[in-house]
Image (cartoon, rainbow, N blue to C red):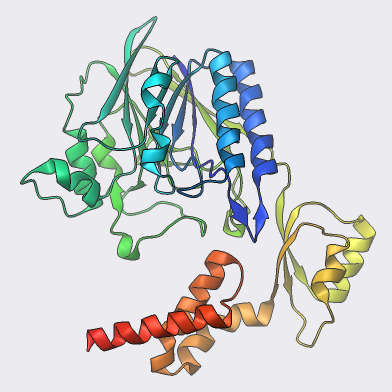
Length: 379
């Protein structure tokens, strides 16, 4: 049985206030062309289908187009919810779609979802585990102690009896590490202290584990536990990552092969660094580019209207930063910020990082009010 494994589509995502739907459609079409070429029996979509719990209509239409193309090619779909998805909304039409070989598991209902398929070597068992946290398991766990993400996943896996002699495939969307290590990017949600980490050894009983959540393609613990990674770069921290999907072929028990199939972006993502005059001259010489660009200026003095002037050559300039400010920002906060202002300053930096812009006066006033209330309650 041949399978495609992808994840973290984040349909509808915006980066620095720019819609990426055109880029995402370009990549979805690439995946469909690869499917037509390689003819997989199924595709595993391991969560974060959408970027927001309430996605824009255009993102919903794009997923609809994707699933329709796969169905027309006779490819089974196995899809789970990630932490960015609304599990309940993703479940809409689930029972009807099962009859069309589109198997969706958005909400965890107390039992690990299970689908069986046949091939020349017998039965392949697919287990669909949507994003879990302790609060989602507690209503079903009775007196069981569920205090960590690992506890939640362990309990969910024990709700079914897995035949070790059969071929078993798991889809999961969690922060899985090996000895506490996994490569993360800025665009992923990070939990303080790594409390959401799950050791890969918990999943060793499966023949292949199709993971979602981390955007970097990587093996975790062993070759058959894999993050496919996101199909495109969603952060400048992902600049050096090669994006794509995994093609997995299951033959008889214990005989499995994997191949990484690269995907080419509509717009490459690049970072350019230097003083403004040199960057402008280089842009004129090369004629510019439509790549997504982060500019880091090394000038120490004032530069007049650098964004507009560079956008004449780099229309997709996403962000411009000053090197000295970027490199000194953290040190300045910790060394010069009065203790009573440090909390709101750190929140301001978080807001800017998440939204690509600073808080306005009204938003800052709200944040300051909330922060003061929290300080008073903690006394």
